[in-house]
Image 1 (tube, rainbow, N blue to C red):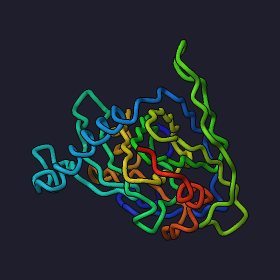
Image 2 (cartoon, rainbow, N blue to C red):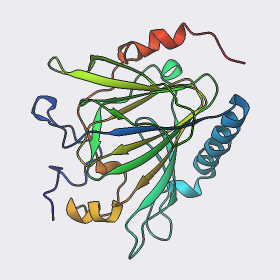
Image 3 (cartoon, rainbow, N blue to C red):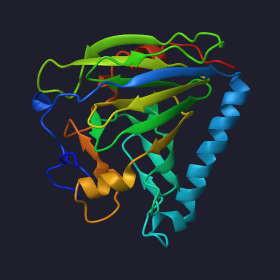
Image 4 (cartoon, rainbow, N blue to C red):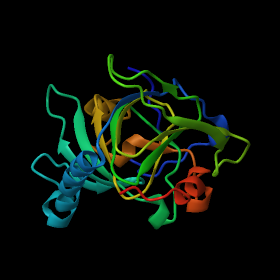
Length: 251
């Protein structure tokens, strides 16, 4: 079995030295489709309401019969696990209701995971998602026969780095779906500009990670490793903050 990535298997806030880190691979981003604003917003609202209801209920914030806490809070937003792993099925799936960088005042940190991830990002009205990595993101063509979707991309400096680390960024525009394939041990960072953004994420080897990393139990946040000790302030998120704040609101 592959060597584990963590020093402390159960830590939920382990930070690795950025200057010693090297991506094991690169992320792939696939544009899926752009929807009419009212359609995109209806989907984002419906999925976001599932997360918010779970967090408000109280039941999902304590271990269930399988010992899994399904309602949790990550750096990028509130999370609700829809399906957990079970014997013979190693994957789980969860929804994330993004925090809004423009109202929250801080950005998420660059990080990587102890296992691969498949992420579908969905934006509604007046919201974009900045996807970042320390390696160039591969932006693929969309579905065959569909209209092409142009994603803005740019490079800048990682705001919480100790050195001159280049950050590679791609922007998912409003009312758009995009799929992100994240290999194990590969850096990435999400920041939503605006209030309407959802992630539908599948972790295909969640139970395997627990064994490989020698964790004492199933812990979602313990499978994240950060590349910065503190969250950058909003004005250090990158050039998207100024760009997004200068855009007119779409009706």
